[in-house]
Length: 388
Image (cartoon, rainbow, N blue to C red; front, side, top):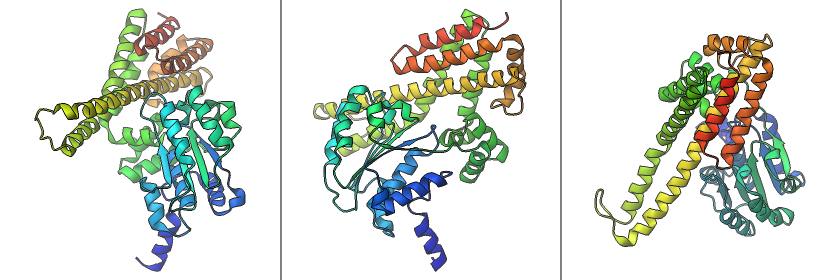
């Protein structure tokens, strides 16, 4: 590597994977290099796909490693540095047990780096009791420990938590910018990349999946067509079942391969050949793994249904845009004919009612309401607003 290339590599670490957040990067770079600008606890907020977790890891690397220490930065970015503790729950909520483990670890002095950094992704998944576990650690932090919480919005956290952190909001990327990034990363056709970025509503990870997974694109299209075809209670019930089935298939596609690999790895660790009987001494470990996979599957299904509801919000947002004579910025341009029919047959007031109902359904699903029943209720509201 020549000198200019080597210098560029140093500049890229640890911020090279952070995309489209120049202002936030500048703020965090200053905090990492100037102790007087460093706050002991941060909250990074922004919509899903805005890069909160990527930015948090980069900030952790900049805090832990000495300037120019690429090896330490790479360790942090890989999640293997002893002074970096991340938590990303794959369950429905962050448990009190996990929060207590983080708090306990936060009181350890850094072992190798300049700081100990605790990153809590999905901080919005804390219950009130779990949030209270963090309060003392945020009120009286050790001198060389920095907390970084990530959430879609500061409103997702308790006021007592918000008052003890410095909030940094990330910017929303533009569709064209996301499309260019996806085309560069995946080699997707520019038109497909643009459609994927638009359908994903600028969520980078989801846009990348839509651009590279034809089955995911097909499931999305079929689900939206089913909702647009709702005419009454019976079709509402059918569409609700179809949404849950599509979300279940999506969740299985995301988790099945990983689940099998984890099971195979566990059995290999205990020296058990594929297809052989599992000894009684290993069954408890296998049961614990299966329980964790079930919790992850539940979260994945909930996330899948929430993505469908986000897509439905985009549909009725488009309807509202058409009702107010704005057709130049539709998210679902491919459904323009069906959207136009709804816009002509509905009163704008009812479109707003449907959008409110979708938001309420998302809240109900977070409270363990049956997904099928919640979706049926929502879609019956949709049906009642249609001219039959």
